[in-house]
Length: 247
Image 1 (tube, one colour):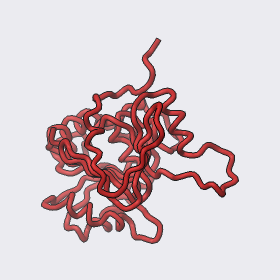
Image 2: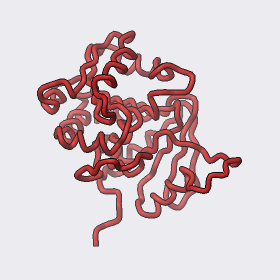
Image 3: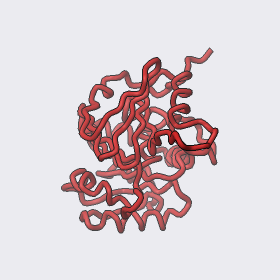
Image 4: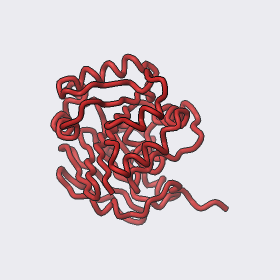
C-alpha cells in the first residue's frame, strides 16, 4: 500500500488563522506538489470557500482549483495529484461526492499512491469506511453512508472532552461514541481540535499537540499524545459496512 494522507480534525483553531495551526504539517505534505484540487461541497458557498483555501495555501506555493468549477469533477480527480476535501456538513459533502461519482476513483487512486488525500473535519470523516461518526446533522440524505474507506477504522473529528462543570443534560461526545460501539464493532479515534493524522503507506502517526482518544467495544478509552504511532490501526480488516449484519 502507498497511501499518502493528512487528516486534520479541524481547519480553524481558536486564536489562529485558517489552517495556521497545521502549517508545518501541510508544508511537509505538499512539498514538491504544484496543484491542489479542492472539494468545497460541504459548504454552500463554493467560490468563497475555495478562495479561503487558496489564500491559506498560497504561501506554500501551490495552485488551488475548486472541483465545483471544472467541467467534469470525476475526470479531474482521475488526473489530480492532491485532493483536499474540506469541512462543513458531512452529509451534504457525501451527497455531492456521490453525485459526482468520486468514491471509486478516489479510493482506487489513493490506494495506488497516485493521489494524495488531504481532509479536514467532514473531509476527514469521508476518509473512514462510513460517515457514521460525524458530529453533523443530516440536512440532506445521501444514497448511503459509505465513504472513501481510506482507513479501516472510524474517526470522530472535533472530539470534545466532557466538562464536569457543565449543566447540559444531553449526551457527552464520549457517551455518543459508546452508543455507536453498542451497534458497530469498529474502533473510533476521537481527535481533538488541533490534532491530525498522517498516513504514509503502512505508517500512521498522530500529530498536533492536543491528542486523541481511541474507543473500542468493551474497553475504556485509550489516550494518545503527540507523535503516537497508531500504525496498528491500519492492520484492521478493511470494511465498508460497519453496522450489524442484515437479518
